[in-house]
Amino acid sequence: MERKLIHPKSPEFSRVITGVWRWSALSTDGIEALINTSLEHGITTFDHADIYGNYSCEELFGKAIANRPALRNTIQLVTKCGIKLLSDKRPEHRIKHYDTSKEHIIRSVENSLRNLKTDYLDLLLLHRPDPLMNPAEVAEVFSKLKQSGKVLFFGVSNFTAPQVELLSSYLRDPLVTNQIEISLFYHQLLFDGTVDTLMKHQISPMAWSPLGGGKFFAENEIQKQLETFAQRYACSISQLLLAWLLRHPSGIFPILGTTNPSRLTEGAKALTVQLDKQDWFAMLKLVTGRDVA
Ligand SMILES: NC(=O)c1ccc[n+]([C@@H]2O[C@H](COP(=O)([O-])OP(=O)(O)OC[C@H]3O[C@@H](n4cnc5c(N)ncnc54)[C@H](OP(=O)(O)O)[C@@H]3O)[C@@H](O)[C@H]2O)c1
Image (cartoon, rainbow, N blue to C red):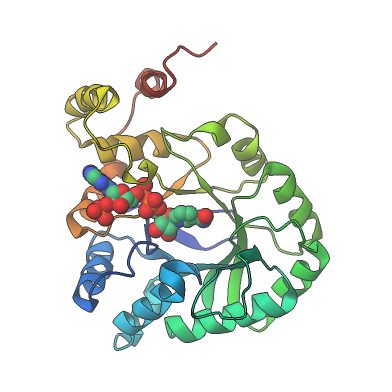
């Protein structure tokens, strides 16, 4: 598995990342199998959020690695904060809302550290742009967390280009990623300036739902057409969809959301598929139904 800088000033992450969003219903054995399969294929980066699985996934993951302390320095833990869910675990929340205040970010990081059974996070992301965000306050808390060694690097998720520019202008250290939805099926951000702005700042995006969240695997005309491409490249449709992202010059890091170890193995091998430029556009045309202008 290729390892790659997500930003010139960041450490290396595995080019394909394992996402734990859908892991809350899994048994301990199921979680261990996904962690082990990831590691066997060189996927060393794991994407979390405080809220995944109704605030449970970080803890499940932490328990699964608790008796393997040597693992910590060989993996990279990414987590997010800033969304407050309506939850039996958070009875004080009267409505789903965002909170990027200093107090909430610090509390959330402390919870994540405790749940993940670690004393540092490799990367902390603000999960969603918060209309009430005070960028100066975020800059202050990021500096404090970095100085304390609790968080090594910072990024954002689902931010627009102007929102990335705004927050960056307040920070001492660069944002190292913007984790955004990108797939063949949801490719708008490759065309609206979001990814171009990241490239301007040498920030590689992480792509969530790189397979469209699995919604497009049903039998249909697009699937049939993708199958013919896949046969030509001697790969699976999933690998083809990942290769479509990996072909982009921004250096996208896809996050695999599967709960199936064999699909994780398949995803890890997508890096070997080298997609031809004209096929990239042909796949785009499959979903847009038209040639580019
Ligand atoms: N920052 C954000 O706002 C945000 C939002 C959403 C997600 N994320 C992150 O991104 C990660 C990935 O998102 P995602 O789970 O939506 O990604 P995804 O990989 O696009 O979708 C995963 C889903 O697709 C299904 N799937 C995969 N291959 C399939 C196949 N060949 N046939 C049928 N179904 C298939 C999986 O089912 P099986 O489990 O059965 O394989 C799973 O339900 C999450 O874990 C999370 O870490 C971030």
